[in-house]
Length: 239
Ligand SMILES: Cc1cc2nc3c(=O)[nH]c(=O)nc-3n(C[C@H](O)[C@H](O)[C@H](O)COP(=O)(O)OP(=O)(O)OC[C@H]3O[C@@H](n4cnc5c(N)ncnc54)[C@H](O)[C@@H]3O)c2cc1C
Image (cartoon, rainbow, N blue to C red; front, side, top):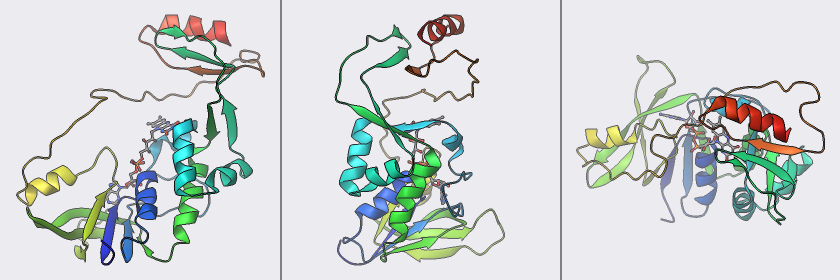
């Protein structure tokens, strides 16, 4: 597709990067995002996990750099930290992993900084249009052809539903996506689903380390394991 409109449902990290990748293929790329983006690197409700520590594994920051040359330097200049895997103490569900030498490093920064760095780039792209504070509420078309999406001002069930025509629709609305249900409403057969992490959840919690518990020279990653007491003993040993 070299002309026409591509609509991206959801302007999280996947949606922003999909829009960026579509430059040059679609004449117009419209990102429809439920939230209004904050001015700077700040929390927003569509990314509830953003208050937790985040990191990009080697393949992640490499892929970002390939897609957006210079993004890694921008993140580092803004305070992101490169953490070499060599010397990291890693407590997995199976216990402490052996330490090993490696060229691999991950990039650690806050989630708002990562999202804002990517957003700023996409904001500068003239072929990208924005519909913020707007919900996608359905799809348009037939089982044979998708012709666009239905949108409505966020959270106002009485607001007028508008139609947005598109030659391509990208679903980047995250794990709570309604697209399978909307496709069913158009009469499409259920989409085949494959999941490699069926039933997995990312547990979330905040912990305050006791003074002196973590030595400044030690980088530790702790993954929870089912028997809490054991994990606590392991974490204390590594700290
Ligand atoms: C506690 C926790 C820690 C994590 N740590 C890491 C980490 O360190 N490193 C890492 O790489 N990953 C981490 N992840 C995973 C990572 O956060 C997700 O994989 C990532 O956010 C998925 O991005 P996404 O753009 O696909 O979806 P989302 O971030 O869910 O974005 C979806 C977007 O779509 C919008 N939206 C949804 N529905 C609609 C609609 N109908 N209309 C309009 N807009 C809509 C939402 O507002 C949102 O902006 C973590 C996750 C959790 C829960």
